[in-house]
Length: 375
Image (cartoon, rainbow, N blue to C red; front, side, top):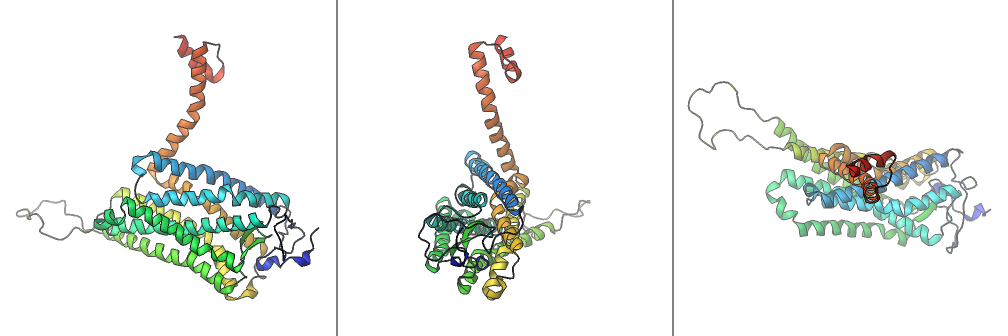
């Protein structure tokens, strides 16, 4: 049993013992001051995380493959979609499994180095996702509101540079965690993550850069697009009745106003829905962080169940984007179906080839292929 006095108060975001040199140490949630008080909490959190990991990997792999396969999806704006999918995949293949291991073992056993690395990669994924969502919004804004300059601004080379810039800014935003020592294990969420109370100023900066500023940029872009859509919908339609007098000359008469293609509107709604889901999932933990930054005394007052729920709600966001694309975007949905058909038909095709090659007696699913072979 570890000496609990050697651990910082988990309520302030730190469960790491002073002088921890990297040897695997375990802090049981039941015995640590930040442990979840409900016996079923670990089961619930592990179930949520397992579902998140599975859906995250399958869904985001479908997104990446769909964009690579489908010419209709290989557009400049979807470079940010692929980048966002890769950011979501990053947490599913490394930090989340370590969190799951901590839940199963009742504490962190992977050591200090992996704690620091998983915390850094999780932060990199989160900030990278935020910047890519902002990139998607700026891309949609330029496409719909400044269409004449869109091809020049978002050429293939420029788009690649924008994506690289988003990740470079994410690294710059996350790297100071190592300087201020804010990546620590928190037993309330079984995660090595950003400790909100280490530095009030840095916490406020993180919330502003990671959440408030990108949300402001995205909100502005989508508000301008909404205004464009509303104006396009309020255009005065021509009178279908009989016209009196000669037809007006071309170019004469009121400007019909901006036009929005239904396809462009659907794409915009898809990306707006993805942003809305992101905002809902990440708002609680960021509001808690901002409150703690403004008044550190609020840290111990935050209920543990609320803190844990806000974290795992944020974790679940990584698996939801692919679901939103499939639900709202026809091209993604159709490509998902094609990929699923290819995957599930492959074993049946292999059975058919085996059957027809051997002319053997077939049963069940292989009976149909053998009947074709015998004809």
